[in-house]
Image (cartoon, rainbow, N blue to C red):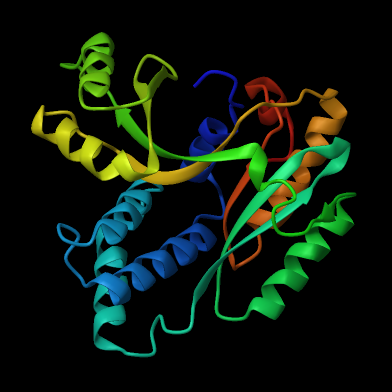
Amino acid sequence: MSGHSKWSTIKRKKEATDAKRGQIFTKVSREISVAAREGGPDPESNFKLRLAIQKARGVNMPADNIKRAIEKATSDSSASGGYEEVIYEGYGPAGAAVLVEVLTDNRNRAVSEVRSAFTRSGGRLGETGSVAWLFDQRGLLVVELSDKQSADDVQMAAIECGADDVNQVDDSTIEIYTAPQDLKAVEAALAAQGVSVASAELIYIPKTTIEVSNAETQSVLRMIEKLEDLEDVHGVYTNLQVDSEVAINSSV
C-alpha cells in the first residue's frame, strides 16, 4: 500500500516466530472467547470469530486450543464477560504516532500499564483523537502461495474480488488490503476462486509515515515491545517507517 510502513508485515512475521508463544496464545484465546460469546460458536455465521480463528492459525496455535477457547466461552457464562475494546493513542520517541488496541476487563489497570510503558520509553500517552486521525482502518488478508499458485494470478483475482491494494511481500506471501466493510466479502470471493487465505484481520495503516535515525527507530521498537508484552494489549500500530533490517537488528 502506497506510503505505509512495513510494520504490519514485520509484526505478523514476529508473532509467528516469537519465543513468547504462550503469551500470544493467551491473547488470541481471549479474542476467540469474546467473539464466540458475542456471536456464537459457528465461524461460518460469526465473522468476528472467524477472524480470531484465522489469527490463531497465523501464530500456529493448536486446533485443540482454539476448540477449548470456543467451548469454554459458550458453556461458561463468566468465561469472557466484562471485556471491552479500547484504543489508546500516544507518541513514542522521536514523535512517532502510536495506536494501541486493548481488550480488557479492567480499564483502570489497562490505561495505567499503557501509560507507564509510554513514559518509561520516553513517549507520552495522548488524548483521544490525538493521533487516530493519522491512520486509516483497513482489512488485511494474507495469502501464502502454494507451488501451484501464481503470484500474478492471485493479485489479479484479489483486485477482481474488490481489493483496494495488493502487496507482494516475498516469493511466497501476498498481502491484500480492503476497505473494512469489504473484508468479509473479499475473503469469500477469493475462497470461491480457490485462493486460500492464511489470515484475515482489521488493522490500522498510517496515512503518511515518518523516518528517523536508526537509534530512534530502535527506541520506538523497544517501546512497542513493552506495550505488546502487556496482557491486555492486542495490537500496536505506528506511523514510523520501519526498515526490515533495522527491525531484525533491534530487540523486537
